[in-house]
Image 1 (cartoon, rainbow, N blue to C red):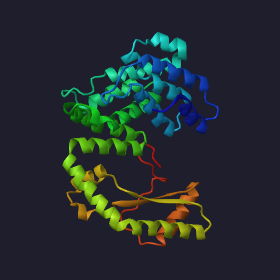
Image 2 (image 1 turned 120 degrees about the vertical axis):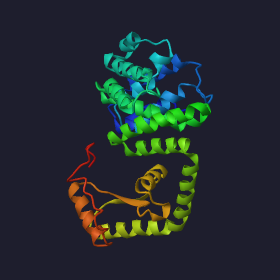
Image 3 (image 1 turned 180 degrees about the vertical axis):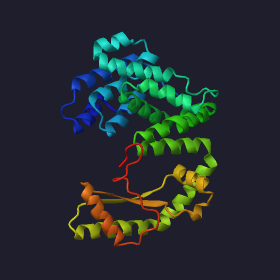
Image 4 (image 1 turned 90 degrees about the horizontal axis):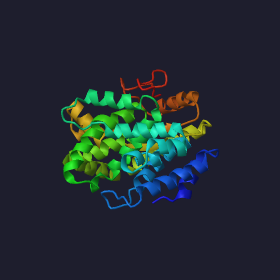
Length: 304
């Protein structure tokens, strides 16, 4: 379990002006309130809000949001009150913790409820401050990472809820890595045979194509360096659920997929993006009809 000073160090690493006293107070308060409570895994319950806070430090969020992550279950699961949170940590943090408590109480898993209604309830609950949603998504991610500790009869319901509500919300927020992890864990839970089949195929392909991927990374890095461009080039493999969804959508087999691997080139400016594109197009042939420019034409969620 992450120690108090380790959490503070994580935050001050990207935010030297962070309120260390606030973080320390929230850590101690939450740890004391959760006391001897345990999770389904047998771990101390406090390990959960601590892991949620750790996820949010990776997103470089402000110290108030990190404090809310530590406190997010105190009103619902301990004898803490909104008034006490307000008095100790201020009304801003109290309001955020209260918003998370309201979301937790929503009946998001009723089989009679329609998906659109679930979205409506959730969005209304977090409309006042987007940070509530960010903490809730991190909360769900850690719960999914530890889903195997839950009773088997509950896993499917939680995975369905995650796939239908939280993964799409993460995608709408532009948090694609989180969305993909939520989808993959849910997919593994809901359709383990398909997950294992695709994963096995990917492992086989990875072994056979390892040198090819490295070769492309090296070639592109060298071509860019020759033109005086500093760039990070990294090959990435499609995730199992993304592959499964595409196979279903296009009614094709695994062997017919043409984009199991992609390459991400990170540079500092928009102008450099287009210069990189020129190098790529003069090094390898383009695929007709497959080019998309999300800089000039962003996605609906403002992804560029």
